[in-house]
Image (cartoon, rainbow, N blue to C red; front, side, top):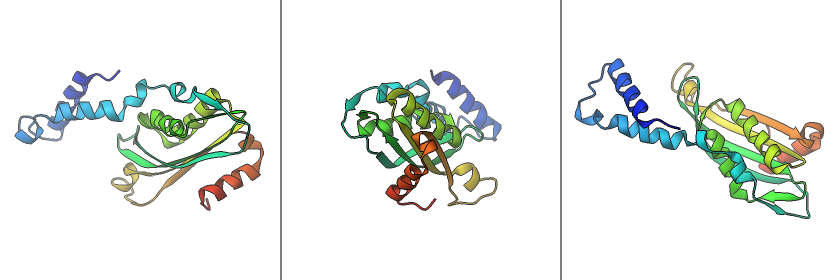
Amino acid sequence: MIDHDKIEQAVRLFLEGIGEDVTREGLQDTPDRIARMCEELYGGMEDDASVHLSKTFSVDSNEMVIEKDITFYSTCEHHILPFYGKAHIAYIPDGKVVGLSKLARTVEVFARRLQLQEQLTGQIADALMEYMQPKGALVMVEAEHMCMTMRGIKKPGSRTVTMAKRGVFESDPSLEERFFRMIGTNV
């Protein structure tokens, strides 16, 4: 659970630490604004992917399902700076599917935490396998990291791409090739 008061105290200390006057007009309400922002940005800590993936629908077809270009925003746990991009999800149903919005909601559950992109990618794939029990899942995440673009090496526009394969996607390379054709990328 997010502790509003502790966040406000920390923000005041931070502002003082960088030499700011926390009593000046423009900063007086900043600790409260940051605390409220944290409730929004890190609300995934209290969310559970099973809530979104447990409602399924029976289907006769077991053809690949892809939801691509799911925009997400997350925060790097190393520098507390944003990273953002797109997630692409594929799965092979085993007699059941979820509503398409549930895939995007699952991305949000894990993105709204302090995170590593590699970990985020695997968490999404693992949740699909655990709660939907498909024949396989593939998750690809492409993101730009502000810790790399606005500080450090300062290379704006560079993207990090991660992928997690589970089930039949691990053993059948043709499924992965089909996924890349369907999302229109040459990665």
